[in-house]
Length: 359
Image 1 (cartoon, rainbow, N blue to C red):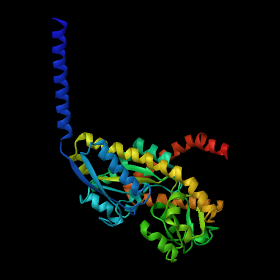
Image 2 (cartoon, rainbow, N blue to C red; image 1 turned 90 degrees about the horizontal axis):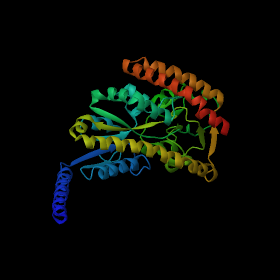
Image 3 (cartoon, helix red, strand yellow; image 1 turned 60 degrees about the horizontal axis):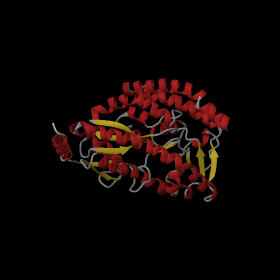
């Protein structure tokens, strides 16, 4: 075969293959499009939390080539902040974002998947979820037609804002504090009155004395919430939430109706958001704490050692009591406790030893 004829034929084959591939790609991207709705427990424009949900939606759009579009609604825009669980479970919307301990009244075991008093930090929580914890979480959400995914971590939180000094456990007697989850149950055991409120109501309640104290997240968010204007004392460490995992809730029926590649897109985007969120908090808390102390003259206080010892004891009692109430919580608590011990043994000769050296 002459060279000219050979090139002509191979060129035609290559062109045909390229055209075929282009047509196949066009068929894939011209496939069915999905328009989903997502609701959150967060206020409109809340940095990292609400903006993270919007960022997640943009990531999904880009990764899917526009085949999966998500409209994000803040708390109260489509459903009330505390109505997210029911909205996603019932199929009113396909996605929701919040923190699993908000649903303790519906699924008691869900509390362990946000944070546990004197439990694990963000690194430990991610490790637990990645090595069996997520399967347990899926198991307890399955009866509600929900699939959970870790969707961010706040990292180590602060102990909270108080209108008066806290010197001993007796100062918790009669204290009205906004604090959810298992940490709230510990405060109640210490004699406090637990108040549950969405983010939008906290500042006003603290300012007016409806509550005496509140925990929220950490310096970056607390600064923007303006809590320093209503309470002068800012306590640490955040014994109640040492590494709070946020959640993405997916309507399971809707998820299974998607093509496999779009299911993977959701999973991967959620994991990326999980890392991004922790990075944002870790990057922003230091500068915000400096501003709170130096500019706004916040009185930064460490909880007394004797109080922390007492709270740790009360936490251990509370966890055992709560777990004993029903089998699912018992199962999750046992798994959490086992992993925490193993993780702590390693952490003692790695992270802790290093921080002690640096200190």
